[in-house]
Image (tube, rainbow, N blue to C red; front, side):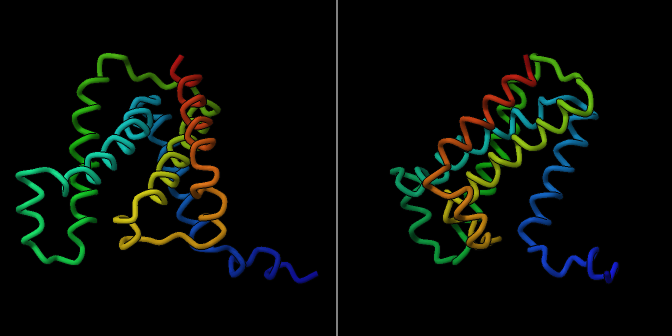
Length: 162
């Protein structure tokens, strides 16, 4: 048996590494400050993507945006909408407390927040210019299973926050 080949990362896709990093970051944040930030992100991401999809069709702003010919304008709008929605929803939900409930609940929080981010990322074409996930992730978290994944993620967050 060749031990260095056993521990080689050559067969791990960059998508799985990105997902693992997201889970670790959300878990560490949940250990530090509870599930509040992950819950806010899980609520803010769908709201922001709805706003970023509706913004170009509005009367005043849509007219101004149609005059701009920037290739990454939809991406800029989506990221700005996510930041604004996160800040506003965080301010709305800050009174609900943020306590750490231990490693297991923090890990569940990290997994559920990552699920919401991946599903909403795949459902938002404007974000594909920043990163496009591979076919394995698109099949697993794509349109066919998106609703099921979101329901599971929100159920986990509701369980952790209760």
